[in-house]
Length: 421
Image (cartoon, rainbow, N blue to C red; front, side, top):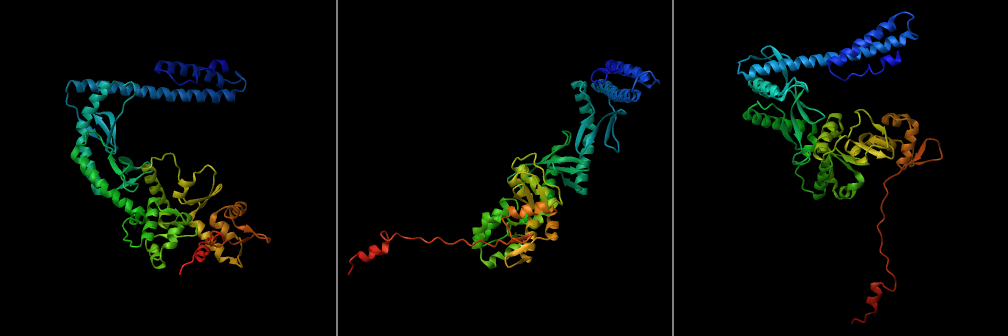
């Protein structure tokens, strides 16, 4: 049985070859189903059935393709004779010419139903005939887009209408100002394309403002203080997240009165980061990272699933995860707003410069006790003698360096030595 079935499981070849293999398999399927004809009959019954089903599906597909090729060839000959044939588009967006299905409309794009065997001349004839019929339908669809405004942007940076792409975003002057490239059939007239481009540009501008409003507004605030202006600029340039230690010198130079304005701009100054809290919401993260990746030609970067506050993965890229709102501590990544909440909990539980870890701290991160203790170590909190107690680290004040002169080189000694009357 094994020898006889060898090679019959292959599903490549034309209709005749597939039919021959299927016939042979059915013969051995008959043998396998006969009582006491073969040992381990259940195994052979399952194997022959599996091969038979596989070949049947492949044969069905090849016969369908053959039928489509024949149908298109007949239609093409009729079209070449300049016969006037009726074009219809049904409710499912299927396109028929003279009652024969020849393709469908996907958004504003006409897709012809062909196979690899369809002749190029036949394809050209069908497309030419179909486009005469779909031109009015495409113009009508553009008008419907203007009225319905039922649009969205997917993870591939394509504008979607009724589950189909009608435009793609491409790199613009900045990461928050992408350009638009229309995805439409050649039969859509140029006037409609220009109208659609202008409409989508306005729609996209509103869409970006709705989701990434706090980020967009950073460029529109009137700020007089140079240090505050510099901080806001840095935050915009880095997609809404800046490490505190990178801009701490600037922050310290901002007067307290000016610093109060930050919260009104939607900016939070935390222990470890300066960021826009609203930009850490799942939809905002997905969209701004998508635009950032488009502008900087990044690909294959995966955003952490929403709802996760604590990740363990050494392979994740530190800078990219920071854009997504996660800070790295060796193999751990902690969401930056959760990190700030953890810091506040630590302060609230600190007494005599010591704090004891509790369940609420671990629940906040959603990690195990073992990993939480490791994190405390990575964050440079020193363990006390008492169990689960750590020593709180406050801000380290940098001592100003005092310049010491060698007595021999001391300029004041030299001045004293001068005999000035």
